[in-house]
Image (cartoon, rainbow, N blue to C red):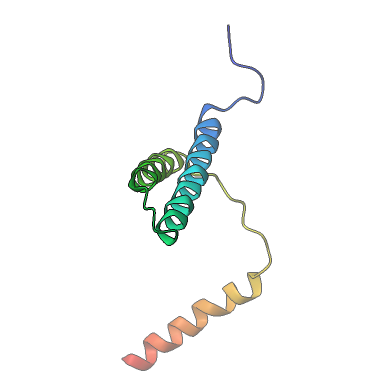
Amino acid sequence: MSSPQGFNRKEVVHRIGTFFILLGLGLLGFFLLSEAAKQVTFEYFCWSVLLLVIGFVFRGQFKRSVTPSGRFSLVRRLMPKAKKEAQEKKK
């Protein structure tokens, strides 16, 4: 049995990584709130660090291909000229 049409395993792993990062940030927020309330719950911090690391590992496995927008094409065309002029002045 094959996977459904349009299913991409790497995209799912990327989304799961995002979910773990959000959970880790939420637990980190709970840890900071518990510390502010003078009832420190260190387990929140430990779980948040673990989930953040797992989330970044999952997200790092898949890099989305981003198509460049033409928003700054004029600036990009001007930038190499400025860099070349700066290098010529240093010589």
